[in-house]
Image (tube, rainbow, N blue to C red):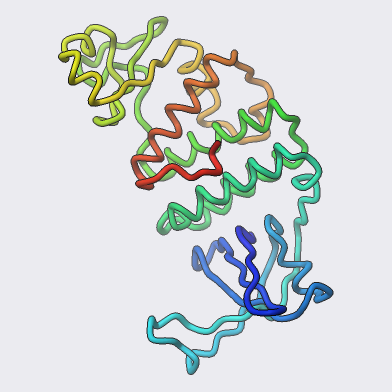
Length: 248
């Protein structure tokens, strides 16, 4: 899958790919705007690629010279370019993948998650685009092994079904109201908390194990959406060390 495409020189471009075999790789695409390969290697296209490498041209950083020789596109995803919200959500998904280096090893799974989300996103309306992005962030957090438990208090282990939990951003843990209040006011301010109402937690629990194609069946109110996005964003920001601008 092509995650990114940037100009390189006068008429060439450099693409960044997510592959099941080698994870994130970069390759040069030679040719101008009318080049067949240039058209095939547009962002979000996926299929089978042939990469030519010439190790004799390795630079001082041991980065091998690679160029795209051929691309058998199996999915063009034209719908991603037909609605602004789809385009921006797709960009946010791919930037998340790039920021976490493709997941760090389980590349086939990473490619599967990206494919599932972008395939569904191609036909999504504005409201579903927003939910699909939160769904992707939440599943990506699980994929990276950092998804927090949001059914029980991390301190006293009490199961909270209908009440609120407070997510401690600094400690990456969800606490019940009672345990959170035991901390001093200044400590609570320093840690930062995200309030998680029952609607937000139920939605995340319901869709966390589902494919993106099933997300349309689960709606939520705007307050729950804001909390769910804030939680998923905070969890991944802690891992990435930054908050990608495309998330906004």
